[in-house]
Image (tube, rainbow, N blue to C red; front, side, top):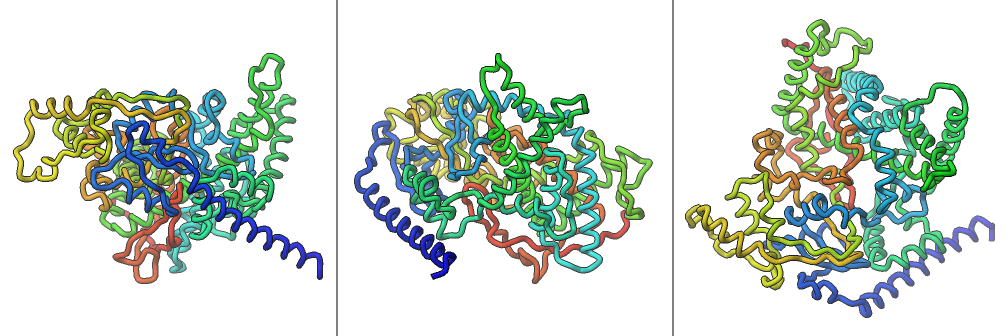
Length: 590
């Protein structure tokens, strides 16, 4: 038998043996593992099935906002905003870490999102300046140039009457920006076939099939077996990172790091980008008085994470934003008119919207972009409906008791009546009401339409009665926060399935709990790249919408009258690639 066929047979046998071992281990684990741990803390306990999103939806309903489960370890699932404020903000020092849902042999796990405790704090301090407002202003010319090129590509698409393959084109836009601004690499391929760098950006993290997601959910319950399959058996199909893309970026980054080290040793002007900052930190950590080291592997890990996060989440959000505008032409027209009005006010000497010249226009200034208030609301509403991270997590680094009375009464962003109603509905069935308000379900609230509005006295009395007690989260337990579910909760957003950017008007945001909007998380561990994502998306909309408009019809995805469907796998994954009709705009009359 040829050597290649022998290897293939060996790999197939190894996979099947591993799957059988996995199944047996899972069945044994289900019988011998304890299931009563959360009951010690008088928190109701549920079971997670093989589909995480569906299980969470089934568990958190009928007034249940918090429940304990086991998924390899103790996990508290909650969408209670008062409890989340304590975890994400007030008691952040007790919940600094995240659960590691990405199982891989890749160095990406050395990236900022995976670090814990003091290591995370140290690296966050080092990396934060590269995502500051002043740094965003310095990046703007590069982002402007890419957005102008994107507009030209879409204008050509409209002239040729071709559908926009949104993932392909917008992925090229975002990957080109992070390559240049973060690593000094010129990889622009907008409007053409993907080059090697862009292809590997798009394929760095695997998109799981339904079968592989089931296998992953089983493995989460048995983390030691998962590590054994990855590290010892080297089963690549269980790895969340594409090994070919990982190998490619390792080679590129190693070569770039070598060049940057030479720059550091010379008198040449140093680039002010993300990679140079990491290399400088690496050299500083090698000094005799340095307390912590940053190895070359750490530099590669941080770089891999930034490459994926800056490319994927921004690209996906921009795709969805354009799709929603195509589905709501009245809103798209309103965004276009705001862009034209703001730009003409900000700079009357140039006409950005007339389409008379193919030459790159002077860049937008930061102040102009800040005046695009309606456009900002459109982006925020897109993020509400389709958050890039459908779940976020935290880990208790010490046993913590949260006083529910103080948590539930500290609601500065809500009026008393809405706060009271939200507290009444934020309950969990089955919990002992002596210890926590989650165990109380207000029956009067179910018939509130027939009741008189509560007075201040009844509000305060109910708070006193229902919001006393505490909940204890033991050390090592994970907290899973279902962002997508919170974003579509009718208690926070009326008619939550509707695309309505005016939900984010200042006066409406002022009376809504800020914890009801979590596309980038909240608290000290909020996404470090938030400013850059908003800048890329808003700049793209400015240049693109002045030249073209987007439509849906019978051959687009979604079709006219259709919906956008996605799978919540931790990150948002579209079930079907977005394809939009692109039409040239008529000359502006503004």
